[in-house]
Amino acid sequence: MPDSSSNPHAEYLRPQKLSEEAGVETALRPQSLSDFVGQHEFLERIQIAIEAARKREEPLQHVLLYGPPGLGKTTMARIIANELGVGFRQYQGSSLDRKDTLAAILTEVNHGDVIFIDEIHRLNPAVEECLYPAIEDFEFHIVIGDGPHGRSVKLELEKFTMVGATTRAGMITAPLRDRFPIVERLRFYTPEELAVIVRRTAGIMNIGIDEEGAVEIARRCRATPRIANRLVSRVRDYAEVRADGRITRQVAEQAFEMYGVDSAGLEPVDRLYLRTIIEKFKGGPVGQNSIAVAISEDEDTILDYIEPFLIQTGFIKRTAQGRVVTETGFRHMGFKPTGDPQGAQGEFI
Image (cartoon, rainbow, N blue to C red; front, side, top):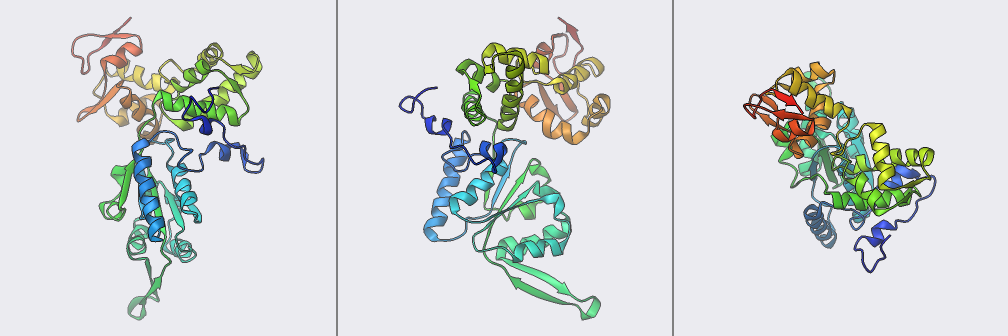
């Protein structure tokens, strides 16, 4: 492993081991902005916002994070709380389905705390409406009584920071989105960034790994840190059972061949998706619902997990008529496109 004089990520690659009670999953999460790899432009902007809030001795403005799963939205919400030195409370949007549940949460918040709502687009509409004055004016309005005898009561809340995260930015209503002064998109990671993450994960798990082994895992993890951590764990299992316990490029390649992860990081369901469009729908265009039925997957899985990476790598594209496999996608699957590249039947190479 490179020493600190030659590697700018040396401190990141030598993380402190957390206690056994904290667990490996907790240890794998960066705990500060300096630990976080990638997302450089976003990190610079959020660091400025945090430092400004500290100087003013005010809570950080509300933050909305969006992007595909596994890129670090939850981790970043925790880091924001750590950097501010405040409490952190985490909830799922779908679980906040009652106004009284939201009221109980908000009235217990301490000054400056970070409230994190994951998949915030799944909030109940009635609950979302109650959230507007809470995040804008730090007030919660409740109605006591029914009918003409009912009366509205305003509760003053402590000032807090709301951090919302979503994989479906387009499903967030405009009134809710407009109440977040800081809106940031997390992008996919580069192979170089992922190699740093892979080496750090291997260090935490006490796994022997060489540079080529780390690079091999990094280029097959769909540009996503969460998947990189998962693949490190799976390759470790293979290395311990079928090899000497150390991850090299050869060991990683053998493990990925057995697990069905190809050179581009596509898993069996990804290849089934591409092959189905090529063979059953002549390369597209075809609607998402038709694909979901053909491969027996739900539309949310296709939209949130399968398609983002295939679009990012240029294997498919979305058009007004539906999904289309690109020439790159045809060739990756072993087909040679013929005729109209937008959707002609390919010939198997």
